[in-house]
Length: 284
Image 1 (cartoon, rainbow, N blue to C red):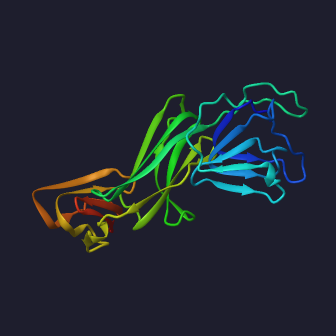
Image 2: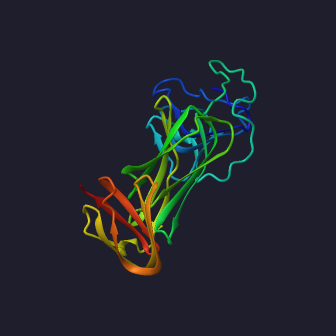
Image 3: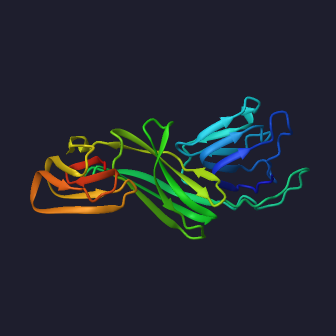
């Protein structure tokens, strides 16, 4: 694979699979004095030494993982942690190489993920996730993943993707019941063919008082009493995907309120108040 001088590859996952014991130095530049940058947001996998010198730098974004085989010559691999802002550089396939068994290629990324942020809203005791794509090719949907430790993950929602686009697109998702303490988040992007690419990991700290919002009885058939630590003038009922289903408003703020949710189907719901969020399980 031939990389142009001072070029840069930006991707979610970069994998070099030559297998241990196979040929090395298969990644090169027209001028080996010029550095090439490979920026990865999710994972770097090296199963052989890609080059004989360290002029190819692997820039690791926060939260990305490294999987490097024991046979890799680490003195020829330069990894830069917490990569800085993206500089403007030529495309990765600019330039010509006259090297045996080396070919110049153009890399088409299914999805170019841009900014990914997570923030905590203390007023609603929820986490707002926002991300953007620079371009999309065969992009089907995004799964929003959450973890308490950064290792074990659960899916908490999905967002449809644009499919095909060459423009900047903004996406967002609201986690209305973040974990107590720290919640970790990542975005898994799925192509139409089932291939998946993961974003970096972001985290928020739940410092709200949602633990002091109580629903009784819970679970129940839907006839409940809701109490909040400070007065509230509304209750919003959301599905686990974030869709607002019902809302109750009062001219006078309340600290305790009886609510009839018997019209809801069996399942798990989030009750939002000015004092925080509670999780309610509806039974038949």
